[in-house]
Length: 470
Image 1: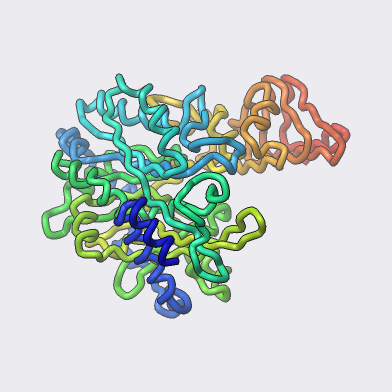
Image 2: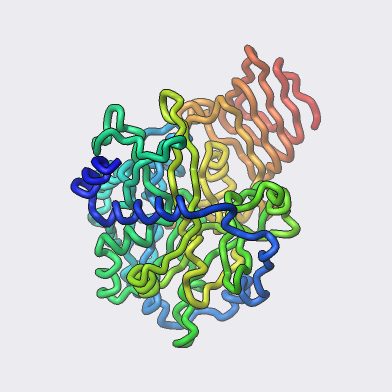
């Protein structure tokens, strides 16, 4: 291990090594759960503000001044492998040939043009996404948005049994292709600071970052939240805002805010003792969850990094590599640092600000007529009579984006849809309309082709194309 560590110091930056050493040392010290269930309390009433109350304050005439203090940071370390794509997830087309990155650039450019502002975009890449992302950035040269990048750290995966790094050397290919990993988005604080970019942006007069996942299409810059941040009196400056939203049964695993040891704190399902997991998932006890849309003070990040006071719970993520080798990777979550910042606040935002695209089921929603696209932002169609999105569950034949696209001659009309389940070898012709609850199940060996122009309302379609009322 000492030889590996020496190589690690020589070839990777000392700061990366120091970060791994600290995380690994803390992992070895931690015994038992990171929270005592009996000490968990509901957050005080004023610590989670309703969005309507923030919005009711209105906007000042000089909102451009506030925008000029803001930086948009997108977490761009992930690959599109779960949707069958190679390369960065941010480069998957999601709407009218626009990728996640295209939509982000259009949103910020629209802000800068509308308010004559200078909001830059910062991408936190990983070693998996950096090269491909930088190649594509050339296409935005003439857009009115400055784009910066920095890389999150690269840490070695650890053998679950021996607790030794599994890397044989520092190479990233061949046998070593799977032995390094980016250590979660909680690494943003150290990597941003170490890159020198944080210092540069502070010198340019920037005060806050708005951080979100690049695959959350609802995470646009909200002027009311920004105004709330910058209008706080000195001495009571809010250094951290977490956007939360009401939990539904689809969100039972999402992290939630609690009061713990007198501080607002993020509680993730991984920290919950097994005996209390069902309680954690309860919609009645824990009513809200973290969207991972975060507003954070740059000067506070600098202070906490320099004081070595950024304390985030360790997430132990088990993986199995080729050859059935069981490894663990140590990660942290960006929102877990909320307890370290002064005057931290939760804001309960509308569900529309949480529109993640993790699967092709999500992709179907955002590609459909449920949403309209303007200046890079998706908004629910005014013709949709319900504020909630339909529940869509596409089967394994739709998992990969390329195969999913071949199964739709055109995206169905879903304005009046409540629930869609599709299983098996199913294809959709042009101009299909889906309403109410629609369940389509092709049994093994069967194929169902929904004819062009079909209107299915509260129907079950089974293996031999029998169409039944639901």
